[in-house]
Amino acid sequence: MTPRARRLTAGLALACSVVLGTAGCSSLRGTDDGVTYIQGGGAVSEYAPDEREDPVVLRDQPTTTGGTVSIEPGTVTVVNVWWSGCGPCRTEMPLLTEADRELGDSVDFVGINIRDTSATQAATFERARGVDYPSIFSPDGRALLAFSGSVAPQTMPSTAVLDTEGRVAAVISGEIPSKQTLLDVVETVVEEG
Image 1 (cartoon, one colour):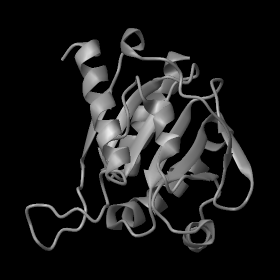
Image 2 (spheres, one colour):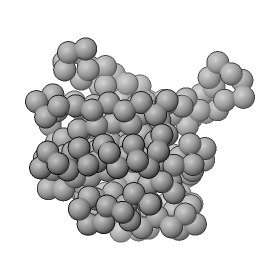
Image 3 (cartoon, one colour):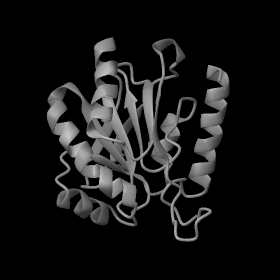
Image 4 (cartoon, helix red, strand yellow):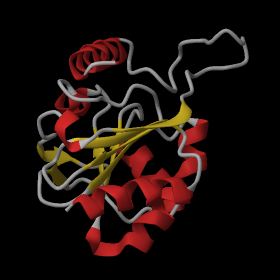
């Protein structure tokens, strides 16, 4: 797929996901009547530096704990899109907190919560799981608009790894298969400088 086709596909998927209350863990039903979310398969897509789009920039976004956080170029950043009612999101959260602790200050972690009905509900979920990194509280999904024009998270959970220029270098669509998968993807982006 060409970079332009990939951008168009990503842009269409993002628009659909925002309109539908975001694809992923949603009230939409899959082909199996027992499934209440559209689950990604944990596929990893990596993009060469010359394929990456404009930087993702989000300034002074409200967090689940009442503060603000920004995503800007400068540091490799792991961005995880989640919701406390999403089973795969709950399953992968310990993996993310372990990776955050292992990588320390060399990599930033930021969550984007797009479905909880209150910031307090989301913060309680994070506290119970030992999450130390901030999460943007964006129940309307608007924070995801910063990813348009680049490869956007298309399912929930989704994890994007941004390079030091703030560009999407990799996306894990669905639940992260393992902590080592995430660490390997991040290490590749860090080594690029």
